[in-house]
Length: 65
Image (cartoon, rainbow, N blue to C red; front, side, top):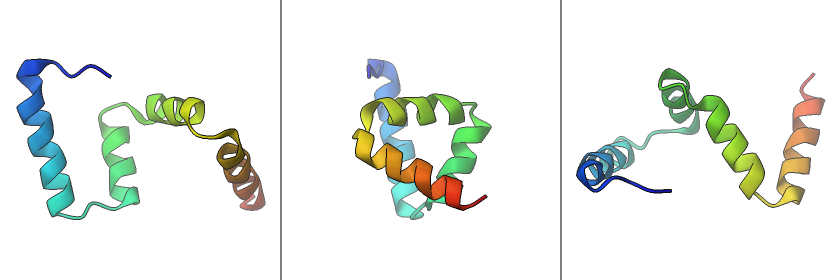
């Protein structure tokens, strides 16, 4: 991931504020959806997480049906 030098301070400040308000997973999901990055984040995590974790999550998701 490349963060543009001029955006680093803004991004850092946003991350610090999210930590300060102790943002939870549901809220972070809402934020990702609002900025149009929900699918991209899912894909990125699917491609980088250990396959065993992905399989476990898929099985858990199937059980919710």
